Amino acid sequence: MKRTIHRPRTFISAGILFASVFLLAACQKKEESLSLLVWEGYADPAFIHAFEEAHHCKVSASYMGSSDDLVAKLRGGSAGNYDVISPSSDVAASIARAGLAEPLDLSKLPTYAQLSPRLRELPLVKSNGKTFGVPFMWGPNPLLYDTTVFAQPPDSWAIFWDPKLKGKLSVWDDLSTLYLAAQMLGYDKPDPSQLYNLSDDQLAAVKQKLLALKPNIRKLWSTGGELTNLFENHEVVAAMGWPLMTNQLRQANFPIGETIPRENTTGWIDHLMITSASPHKELAYAFLEYMIQAQTQKKVTDITHYTPANPASAQFMTEAEKKGLHLDNPDAYMQRIYFWQDVPRRAKYIEIWNEVKAAP
Image 1: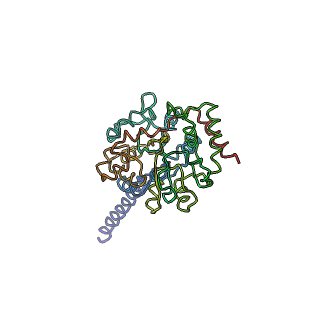
Image 2 (image 1 turned 60 degrees about the vertical axis):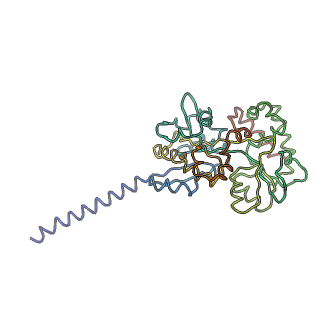
Image 3 (image 1 turned 180 degrees about the vertical axis):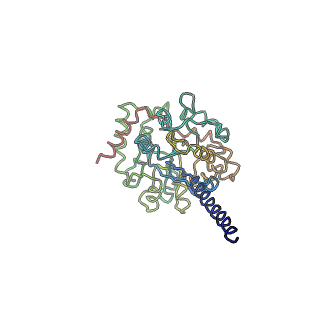
């Protein structure tokens, strides 16, 4: 009698144990991993952790050093390694045309309608009537300077060529540095888009202008952290950089200043895209929706000091924060920024930039 009673109990206990193990394994299998290839500052735990908890997933990020670095990885067969990318406005169009990004179903992104109409209407991530990305953050490439060296903000990029600054400057190791030299040669007049469509003769002149700058260059920076270190170690006193570095240096109590000189400057609009080879497209959609929501955008600006694409994020900011991010008058600020555009002869620009770097 005892054995007949005992057996069912053992059977039920084993069944429960089996079911528990099965459910645990199923839950573990459900936890997806989302891989990002993005600019520095776009995967900070300050805002990524909440997404991971809400979606029971793990977000892993790799950082790109330049737009060309991103494109090279996507074209080199690594597209399937990444789910979400953050191309800037100089390569977003070519990524869309090449089929490297997924055309978006905007009905899965309810917050898309909140984004700046001016940014949404740009043709940068549109092809054949489809939209391939969402505007995320935007900003300038400003002149950064050590305020203990410059009592007043430099009012012209021309100071970069001042012999007194020999070995005291830094510029980005990126073909976009050509745009700066082109501006100084007046090629942005009357149409700033000419910066992205330079002729062979104009590129030759840009090369000579940059060769003349080389004695003043202490080092080319590749990452934001590298430029921040150059300032903190007092190796450089001025540079073309990003607001991200300004924010990092201010948090470190370094006397950094940021300005847009009278010639204006170039700038960028970063987009979030889902790669066409992503194995986690639904999770990627959820990530895009989360990242463009007003509260998340505020958290991203806290880290990067970039201007958010969702103007509704201003409701979570102080008046000083809104003014600092130019949300009090974004249209006027945009007038001072020549946003990067698709560069049809990008290979030629890269060739010229490499020749500048290789020169003694």
